[in-house]
View 1 (cartoon, protein in one colour):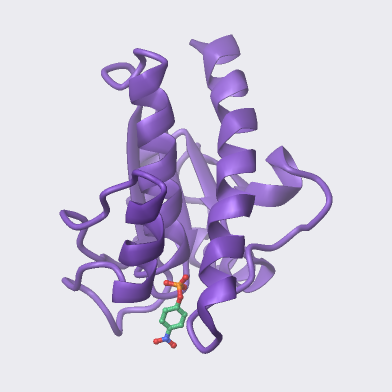
View 2 (cartoon, protein in one colour):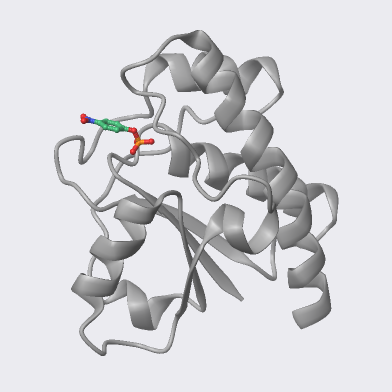
Length: 154
Ligand code: 4NP
């Protein structure tokens, strides 16, 4: 199974989701059976490591994001992945526009599908430190639910 997380810049939310979910897969002994990646709808940060604030907040919870590098999502991703999970409604709309019938991937909003009480992972880029903690809280919770679905589907 192949899962892609998508946000705007691919330097805050989606690399966090990639790191957190991969960590949970490793703990569950499923890392070899599920491939995980992340990408951004925008191209401003292509090739860059995750934002320093994102890396620091993640590392405090045991997720090392230092080896990740930003890339932009492409139409080919709709065939390369089974499940594409957008962080907010703008990302979802951009993905639907980009798709134009390409690929078989299921496309959904990460939190709407797996968490419930909040639909979007708020963009932390222009805010303070608390925003990065909230991103982690939301993503950890939704990743637990995603792991349950993956276990059912494997
Ligand atoms: P992300 O956060 O989409 O979670 O990676 C952002 C990163 C950069 C920008 C916006 C959001 N930016 O405008 O450069």
